[in-house]
Image (tube, one colour):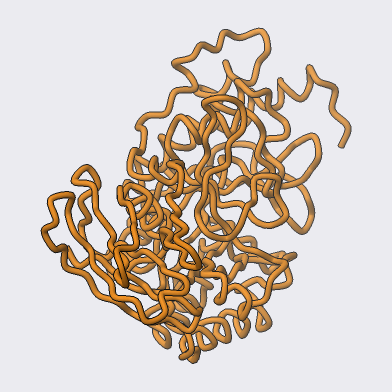
Length: 406
């Protein structure tokens, strides 16, 4: 399929969302800043980009710990390509089959979460699916799979989310298809302004039909462009990337800084490290799956299903470390809360004294990690010397956690 630029733009303008996307996908159209503005701006992850406080006192190091309540690490399962599509001829169910024979109910709900109710799952959802990943062709030339045109499916999904609150929705593209490349790299076909407009359109679709959607986005094909990153920074959305992307720093939510003023909160699976090492590094351990082939670990097949079950079982069986299940938003929120905590530390005789700034009053659960506390005493207090309640918890990571209890 070889398209000239003019033909490609004409194709795009006659395909999904023409009434909204024509202007942003036609170079002759007028696209202003308002077309690419986020409908809302999420504020609760901003502190992830604050400078992390670390204090070194002789052989002792005090630092902010990403996880609350003395947890050593966090875990989640994410599943790409959720949408109201089934392609029976190719054996593909992207979540469109909501019966007990489908992947969503038949496996994710009735088997995985029934067996491991502690598990948190992020369903990376597509707003207007176009891609057949096996044939690398478009599955429609209209908006038949636009979420707002699938009211019965949306109602059923809302019911699942209400009944199983540990299952969360996140955003995973508009079309999930690049017509030029015949690939999943949707945003590689847009200019930066077009990308921002498509992101805005996608964002609005989710807020309208699935308003509990997490402020989390994964780029189709893991390909984020400057326009996408600009939108994420402005909208306050978390980028769910991976160790195969340029924005990756670690699995733990952190801040990727691009151009001046471009701060993007990101987190995602590390495909280069084993679970044991990730646990020792206080990581976010992500079991990453797809709904369908061609990904080997798809939940429509036995290998993917057994892998997901084994992942949940493996986390449950780990007793050396304390692991909490969190969604992407919860994990990033945990980091933001401890980064927002303002504190200083000093060694007074044989006592480590941590002083909390009133501007960063803890809400409870925020945790600091102390390396090499040894036999020293601990105290947490206000600037006036009033005691602040806390718990000290030892960890097999070789540190002591100071957990704020109020």
